[in-house]
Length: 439
Image (cartoon, rainbow, N blue to C red; front, side, top):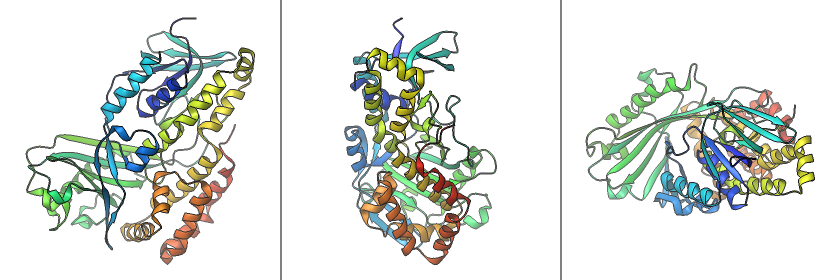
């Protein structure tokens, strides 16, 4: 045994990897984190609802917050009396690293090139020729992991966004208390652009008295080529909104207040509805590598953190078994099967399949259908749309929400939903309700 032998290795030092590592460290697990650059900052903006931040234990790390959010549709606007926040990603990452280090966790700078399991544990082969030994490994390296097998099925949809941080002379007082969660109104002159994009929406966060973050987003779609091919058309749409925004819109107010060049650009591609992992494999996964992105919204931070304590506690219980029992559980794969049930409980699998079904419908909608959909969606009881967006509702409640929505939706959407339910996507959803598939 060497100093780098660990009971648990976590691959990846992004939000999912460090979230799980910090929870495991609190449970007393002897662990290590391996990443090509463990100290790298987290690049994207991480936004979440304030009540979710409280529920998942990161409220103290919300760097900027707004008492309310707003949506805009062709049918009119609505204030969502639900606070929204932007994470202080640097502060949160530093806190998690410190807590892991204080608990004795090892941080290794290295790229994992191979994962080999045997009866007693796992060996990670690194690109520099060295290796790491452990009993269990969890891949939290993000989407498209080479080490995690997924069930068969159709390819994912993609959420693609182009965001810019603007310097302004002063954010108008009326804008500081509200962030625009979704502005689905058409881009001025959109028809003439002929850019091949599906419907897009605007997202606006006044992040400081002299800074505003704006983003043009495809909620979910299926690009003909690489998802990144949508960046330039999204940038064009965003600037078209800015330059031709009608009086009274947030961008019209900000247009005359801009100072100099864009400070930062955010390019975002999120695979949505990625196939779930196979439950019989010994390489475990968490976060994007485990397909934890909310298939209907693109959010992953909250759904992932909501599960980290349960997964950490299950790992701690498994690894603290008497030596003979632990050896038997590792050799037979019983430990790994139990861990997959903790990572993806059957209820969450059913919910994921319901959300993925909804994602498929959203990806087919034109702008009038999107407008009708969200008009009805936000007319649901607050508790229902909140739990749907946050991926927190148990399956029976989620099904009841979807049925209530179906009953209130316009005929065109009812027809679309009914056709999908009776077709191939509905059949796949029903077949997968039992839980994760095994080989």
